[in-house]
Image (cartoon, rainbow, N blue to C red; front, side):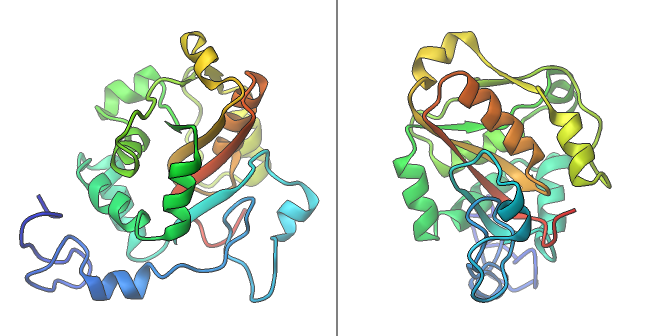
Length: 226
């Protein structure tokens, strides 16, 4: 396994190294200032992005580990689409190197993944967000707190408004877990965030079900909103 045995860095090719060597981590995973509502990269001195000043997301807070750019774009694609779920261990380890992420995980009453529809889960064979949750907080994560109601169109190339419309009412809270989630402070995890439409739809469903608050965590955030 890349994270435990000597291997070659998947970014620079350094040998021996973990899946991502320490110099590449320092170069490409340095924490940066982000909007506390949507995790968009902020200009120096700004406290919020323009979108969230006008129309904040229903998230108490939102964190991202890296920008969805080189080298993370290819690595996340491998994790998500190319049958390489073991990348969750490396991505989760990188996330837990940031103290604010550790605090967010420890302070959340429950940590939930963004679910896939049954059809997409059967096609892919695993839910990358669930794999990431298990790597981030293996203690009592909740895999089925949220359910997705059918497939939504692929969102690649869609703008903010179109994504929001596609994701409206896309999720529902599993009735079995309503007592476990009501009145609780929740953290919802996804692999990539582009406009926040998916995390917002999940947060709306959880808040309607009685959650006290919902925050979001993604591994990679697109550098510019759409």
